[in-house]
Length: 67
Image 1 (cartoon, rainbow, N blue to C red):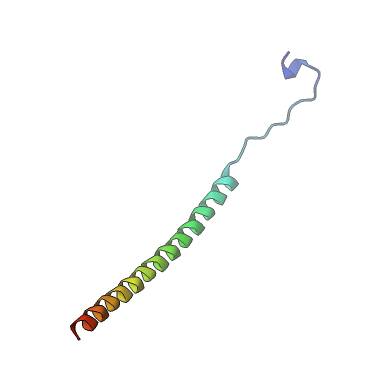
Image 2: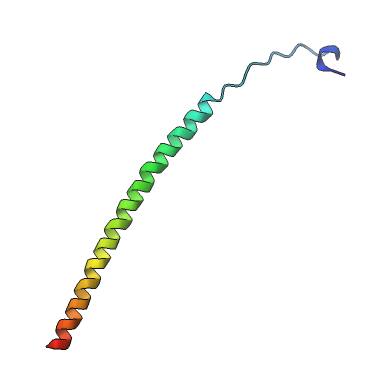
């Protein structure tokens, strides 16, 4: 039996508006992008510092061997 013929009150349905959900996803994506950029910058800096320390250790080892 359909709802219209069941004796139940009339359904007052409103169309679904997904805008708030889309806005929430957009803000999350933007925040995630900022966090990922910070992480990449930190990893890049750590990599450069590690490379410099390794180079200094290699040069120091060579100097010690030659002395």
